[in-house]
Amino acid sequence: MRIVVRIFSIVCACLAALFGYCLYFAFSQGKEDSMCMIVFVFVMFVLCAFSSFKLWVGGAKKKNKNTGWLPEPHIQKDTRTPEERRMDALLRIDAVTELPVEDAPGIILKPGEICHYSTSAHMVTTKNVVTGYKGGSVGASVKVAKGFYLRTGSSRGTPIREDVRTLHHGTLYMTNQRIIFVGEKGFDYQISKLTALTPMGYDGLTLQFGTKNYSLIMHEPYWIFKILELLQKQ
Image (cartoon, rainbow, N blue to C red; front, side, top):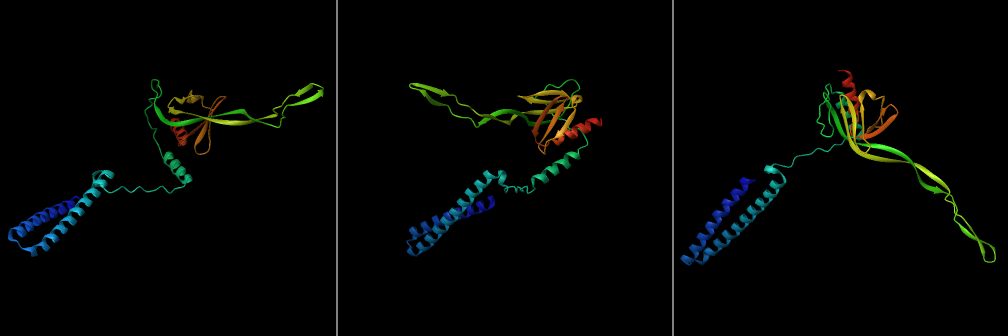
């Protein structure tokens, strides 16, 4: 593109010089028939200058959009279904044979402790609360004698209770010694205290430490199972 712009610029410069020469020749020699040549050269100069300007502007925009005058990279759209993506992730994680090592800026590691996994997660808490009332009555005034009224009370009816789930954001860490959740509902347990690990669909799991249960939603929870497997092989 830059070569084409330079060629057009050179042509414009030559036409400008030729245009000036034709003007000089016409006025110095007094020949009126050279005016056609002047008009022709002028039109060609304008066309070449306009084409050069368009190429230069278009090339500048393309350079700003794609650094270094390179064509736009072709981004292939992921046409896999969610189920296929999850299966690919399972196969990829299952093929890991060595424990990963990660930085853990959010926690203080103990001597000899190594962080093997960290991810953003949400802890799910469920609480049974009253969300409304069913039935009930509205109070009214009943006349029992002249000038005397009896006010009946109103009733709310039967309360409706429902389980309401709340998500608490945090970060889950897994080391060679502990499983830690840093957040509003945080916890810190030794791996040896883990009594059960239950998948919760494809995007979560439930950790049980004795009588305490923690349900977590995260990306690729299969890593927890894999790291436990690799730790047991050490």
